[in-house]
Length: 171
Image 1 (cartoon, rainbow, N blue to C red):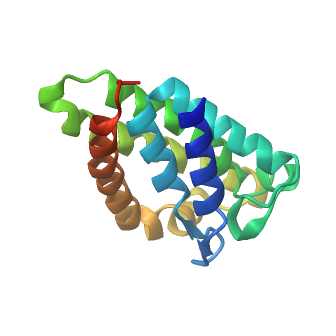
Image 2 (image 1 turned 45 degrees about the vertical axis):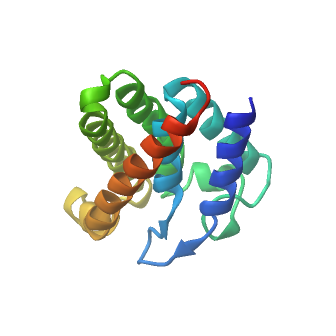
């Protein structure tokens, strides 16, 4: 419970900090979700992310730019937020379920797949709510973030595996 609470707090700290890059801001949310998944595994990370989303839904200003509430989740960029839950499950599954010899590679693959799911969910909701074409949406919602998200994946895996090694027990 303490581990989940700590990563929920980390999400609440990292996610509101946003750098505007057009319609979709750059935040450290993806990094925080991936870090939680690598350290905690899929179940505990999903709990941490679920609590974070619930905190935002009840009105705490924990989403990007300090926003909160149902309009954010059901708005054009809300697909990214609810995809964090799926990201935690996917990246956590790959991180915990891999052998020690290939832990880094499997964790990284899991993080890349999780980010792809985030792009998919976020872009689909963006297209549906803004009536934008798919190619236009990809240019706005995905292309500007690919390099930054690859760096976030590497950092989350490197840091997450080091933290996980230091835990007195494995999650």
